[in-house]
Image 1 (cartoon, rainbow, N blue to C red):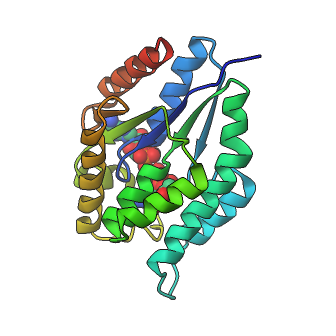
Image 2: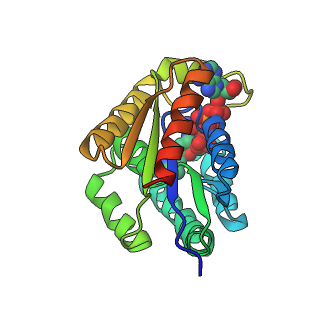
Length: 209
Ligand code: Z5A
């Protein structure tokens, strides 16, 4: 029987380079003959991807903060229980573009939902499952926006203000500072090669722990 894989999430404000570094991390692990799957939240299964569509589509109707929060966790319940946990149990590593830290940052820090309410849903949906490691790609909001915003139509989150994203960055930094053994803050403002090298080093170190 294979041993459980590691669950590693990539977080940060928009455009900091999460998708780019997920691919880099997957190549590092594959080169070490580690079986790896790359996925994302909200999303990662057909049903959770449909919920993602609901969440990201700009609409005229105001979206209630609790509706947004519950949809995030509805997508997460489906993704975690039907995909992530079976992959980990089969011995594969799971690299996920965002997870519950994003909920604390966006719905908590960004929208102002209480951390207690989020923690209650976290326990309900996840029990004691938490990422083994969180790679926090950190850069100023302006840097991320400048990288992300030449992609055309903005989604419902991308239409938010700089102040919204500043609160999100602050929440991420506070969470990372509170558990430095599990959160790995990477200065993502540097050129791609330097960021990729540091992330590759982190992945190699996780593989030997
Ligand atoms: N959300 C939420 O509110 N609550 C939750 O619980 C969860 C999510 C799970 C969708 O997320 C939205 O859902 C998100 C939060 C919310 N909304 N926002 N904003 P997403 O992860 O799919 O969307 P995103 O944050 O907007 O990701 P992104 O824009 O695709 O960015 P990224 O993956 O971090 O960046 P990238 O695509 O790798 O890179 C962007 C560009 O920069 C690209 O051209 C790269 O080639 C370039 N790049 C990357 N690194 C560098 C460096 N180092 N130098 C120069 N250029 C670089």
